[in-house]
Each structure stands twice: as structure tokens, then as C-alpha cells.
Image (cartoon, rainbow, N blue to C red; front, side, top):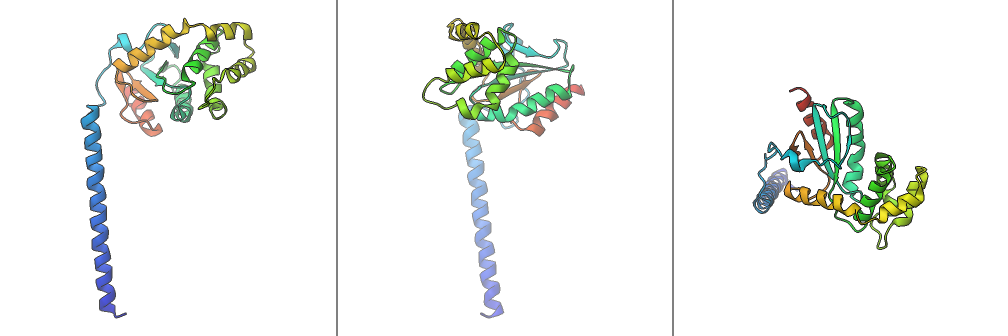
Length: 225
């Protein structure tokens, strides 16, 4: 093949590639526009402060001092893979900024065993082991989540691993009174615009994206104020 013909073919391929990339960019922009149109969100909508009266409740589990400069509120689902994946970064933040940050966790439940897992975690909390049980659920999520049947046996096993009073744990887990506080979390989450997990607020502002660098960046930003 002559050199001139090779150049013509190369130029044609480059032209076609530019058209393809351009089309992909347009499609991406249209998709983003449609998303924000139907969700009512704006691309930079990250500074709206949420009402303190609905952002946290007295019964919510908290870790860190009440006078902490940075208040983190996380709506999570124990059965959510993304929540389990992000858990190490939340744990790291609590250690890195110890004394400067307070974490409050609340439920937003979307999976088959989510409600039972929340009740089990709260039952462990009544024996002072909320955070330990939460961590066990995340670390062992692969064995108890997304099952057709209730994962009660797994939760009892984790309670045994934590040396809890099993009779009390079972009674508390099965107590429908647990649903009062869980339902309050779900109601508040809906009012706050929570529609997926994890959803994180830092000093009343919902993060527009969930990734470690953005998470730590926003914490640092609030600490510098």
C-alpha cells in the first residue's frame, strides 16, 4: 500500500474516532441533564444545611464528643455493599481526627434482611456493643446478606462472638418496639432527601459524592473554619 493511501486511511480513522468520542460526550451530558431534571438536584447542590431537628435524634448512636467541631451523620444499610466498602474510611476518620469529630449513624434500609440486621444491631447496642456488632455485620456481609430467608442464625452467632447475653439479645431483636426508632430514621431520611446508601452529611451538608478523598477533604475543610 502506498504511503499516500496509508495517510488517507489514518486521517479517516482519526476523523471517525473524533466523531465517536464526540457522540459519547454528548450522550453523557444528556444523561447527566436528565438525571438532574428528574431528581431535582443541581450539579453543585452540596451546601444546603439540613434541619438539626431531623438530622439526628436523641436515640441515635453517636461516637465522639458532643462539642466536636465536625459532626458527621451517616445514613446506612447494614446489607449495603457500598456501606461495607466505605466503612473502613469512616473508621479511619474517627481515629485520625479523634476528639474533633463526632459520628452519628442512622438507618436507610433497602434490602431483604436490612430491617432484621438493624434490629439485631440495636439489640447488641442495648448491651453496649452497637459499634462492634455493626463492624461484624460489615466484615461478614458476604455470608449473611442477600438471602431469601431471615439471617437470624448468623446474627445470633455474631452476638455469641461478642459474648452477649443471647436470651436477652434474641428477645430484644424480636421486639417490635425496635421498629419505632428505625421507622423514625426512615421517615427523617426521606425528608432529608436520602435516596441511597451511604448518604453522608458533614456539619449539616450532604456530600454530593461518596469517595474517600472527597470525604476527607470536606472534613479538613470544616476543621479549618
